[in-house]
Length: 542
Image (cartoon, rainbow, N blue to C red):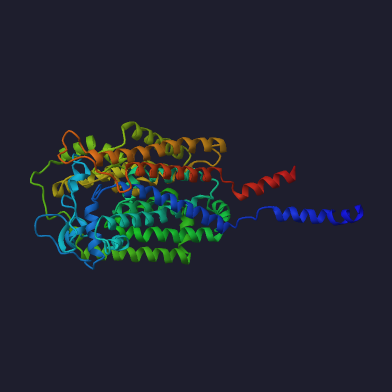
């Protein structure tokens, strides 16, 4: 019956429109959008240093033995370690014998493969073990050291490394989700990836408070430069895409500043100095008098300042109680070096090493990225900084250029003071918290319309390719160094393998690099909801 069939299948235009509307995908809420980005960033920023954590043998780099022993003592209640009386720097901690390999420090020479470590005893009898970190604030060690309590062996070290990596990943993810919706600040992720260099991944993937120091400093630079930006109102409008626009934007930045400042102050003896220096440099570069007065009138700012102030007071109290000022006074070099010789050595040899260490130096400087990697990385820094200073105010230009100069001159001054006490002391990784400031300030100064969307995509594509190559090759060099050492001089047999195997380690890091590339592509290709709204408004007008 044609008439009946027509009556059942024919729809009114209004019903058809409603069904089409129902078929459209539901709009993702801003908070859901922000959570997705944060979790994705957390995974990527955790897995990359985790790859290094799983391919590095005990004490494979940067004083890890000292920090492991300090952490193992802290979680067993030995907060104040007894002082040394044998002319060594540091303190002694009572830890299980199963934790320390027989030749724990053999990788520091760059000669032996990791088989030189030997096999630790299975006995959990407590021994007094020396650590140069015995003066350090217990804050970091009390957080990451708990796996060493049930597992006082290499399993516990791996777990402590992963816990340290996760702690830092939370901070990096918070930094990225803060800058993600800012349409006019698309170079900030370049700055963040410059911070997350191969050396940083090593520090983040080991038991070492230096990794947390760099992560907290990165978040602090992000929040302060956004908080003091002359375009904060525009950024607040953009931030609505993630559910923290308007007044919520300022409030979020204030509390993230506290989240970064408190652990930075408590982390290491120098943490308070670094936190104060970052705040001062940020205000010198971007602060305006009326803006500062406006911030100081806010209750949440006062609370944040109070929280950081309490953390600083606790840090100073610890330094006084633990006699941190005596670090290095127990041992004095036998040969006195003239100041002129120290200055000559630092300028000729140390400046270059310090800069390379902010990029790709592994182990105890026993494996390094080739010169062409360092030069290319430096060119990226140079182009970002040059673009930033050409488009910044005189104040910001002075701060951007002053940061590297201050780091190098300050490092020289430190070595002039410390060489007569304990020898050459300064490392490039120590000034990384301040060094990175020129990245973030320059990225903030780059004009929003300087690169077209196509140009931005190409820039990130080339940069991610090189960045991933540096990370992958750095891990390859490091594993080979642990496996073979110096083949001509090594006395121990070759054949050490990472816990996840050599192929597994390479596969893991390549997978992680691809994840970072995917995250960066998502960042570059992501369309801000405001763009769609502006496009719709233009279409309606035409």
